[in-house]
Image 1 (tube, rainbow, N blue to C red):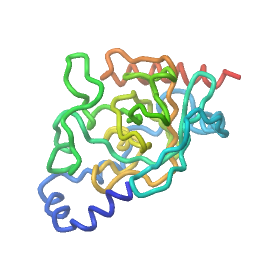
Image 2 (cartoon, rainbow, N blue to C red; image 1 turned 135 degrees about the vertical axis):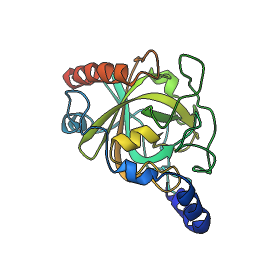
Image 3 (cartoon, helix red, strand yellow; image 1 turned 60 degrees about the vertical axis):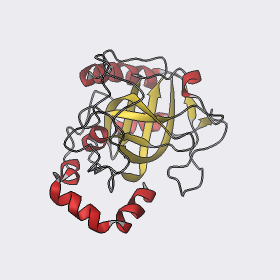
Amino acid sequence: MRKRLALATAGAAATLLAALLTPAAGAAGTSPRSPQEGSVTAAQLLAKVGGCSQISNGRYRTDEETTATVPVCGANGAVFWKADMDIDCDGQVTAHCNWDTDPWFQDDTAFHQSDGRPLNSETLPYVVVPSPSGTWDYRGAGIKGGGVVAVVYGGRVEYAVVGDTGPTAIIGEASYATAQALGIDPDPETGGAETGVTYILFKNSSVSPIESHATAVSAGDALARQFLANN
């Protein structure tokens, strides 16, 4: 995200013009959809992932210019990492996610809706996983597209799905809708969170259809309660 902030500063005039021509995404990000999804609290989940049994063959950077400090950790029934949150606005073209609002916009996602269309970053909470590499391959850990994720930030829990893949060396990214629900500025160019975001991905889980957030919440709550009960 720091790379994006630097680019935004360099292109301040262009950013200002874009802000005048498009709705203010940042303002929306200050009003999360709900402070809590499901019955498991943020404190309970964070207590469960206090330590790290590293399963990745190395560590990830959170941005292009940072050092690699983030390991992928293993737990009974889940994998997790603690990082920042960059905003993924890829997928369907919407009012807040398009080529005018996001210099890095791509009109596709690694995983698609049940109708074959890309995911909608503006409405669907989803998380980005690093593309497979020698550092870590999410597929070997029981993680797949549509898998359930609990995202914890600022005392809130938001359930999401695995919806896209990113660079092989960078970790810590989620959709516009995920950020907005957690009270994080969802602007794809200047928003995000510098630190303090925990991503808990439940192994061998799947939401069908992938675009059903209600299903992700109900499945996520059950998986989170099971995760807390695991030794």
